[in-house]
Length: 498
Image 1 (cartoon, rainbow, N blue to C red):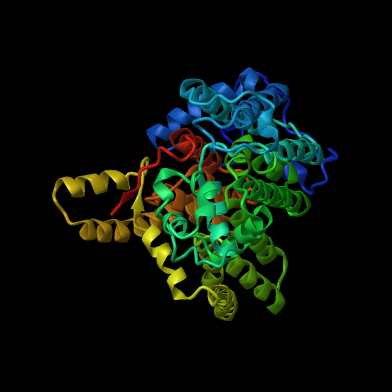
Image 2: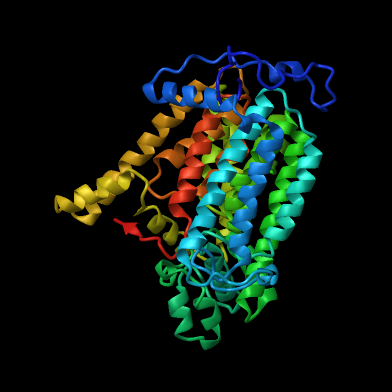
């Protein structure tokens, strides 16, 4: 087994790797499907996971038809939650297709059963498809793309599920469209002077009514565009945001289909990935746009050389940072191999262009627009282990400032160490332009004090370009655990701010 486990030594199971003559549209297919020669599991957890995965990989779940059916069931359950809005796992509003089923209202038990079951089935379906792919299943990626496009087209017209973030996007966009500054004025403060803002305010998660925007100027421009169309109706604004998000998600899928060395694997990791569809499309998160900027920058770095390639990389990084600051991890990941090769001029050129693009975006908002980013960096939330560090510090009567300094110093160090270990776990003959960004983004997900399942999008999109490796299983498990932990419509979130 190449993707999630080692090559089995048990009696014959599903068909083995296809021959080089298979019409897959990818060169070197025999090499792509060859079993991965990775080291044996070293730790007890890794050995246990390998044993469990090896047994499951020879179950019916590795049958492509079963895996696709399970994936579809997971997506269907999540869509039912969106179609029965408003309920305890969705925004308290309805989008065009949210009328097809009666609302579940305050029935939290039934809603959560549907939501969590959808998460689990999506995870199992993803694992089954990856196992089948490792054993020789070569679906037509265009067919997967078309099916996913249909699912996305329906999903963007359903009420967002699992988070209230889209309501905050709409609220910030409405403030900007009305001439306000969402980096200075919170939704609650804006409501005090604009009674027409009340429909937007009612949809925001309780924890975020006093929070100014922590997103970049490019994200605000997208939000303001949607709000300029939606006007006083927040449901229309949210619908526009969902459509834009779905379109970008599919655009990334099409780019991966056309540019990846293994388009089948890339499609399974992104466009046909039921876990990512649930978190990014159903949730309507801006992280889709960050992932788009990230994969474009990575592919340009791999395929375009010279000055113009560096300029384009710099522009893409600058625009990505203009959405969310975590795009900087991709920038560092791309600079890493260049620094090792002592390409100082390239690094300086890309960094300079990126800074110029970022500065141009912030000019209209002023330096105060940067302040919320640093405020957000002080938040801590479970299941991050740093939340326990914070609680211990509070129990020992440490001042919040001291705890903030301790956590703020330790988690970047932990991230760098994890990134190095992940980088070393992947074969050294793989292109560093894709391995380094993945290592950093995944390490950030593991080490950051503040993380949600949709944050993993940037790691998934980078992983589409990394050849088979053991990190796939870990990213899948981390994403699903975060999804189960944080799915709840956004109202359950408690800020652990230090």
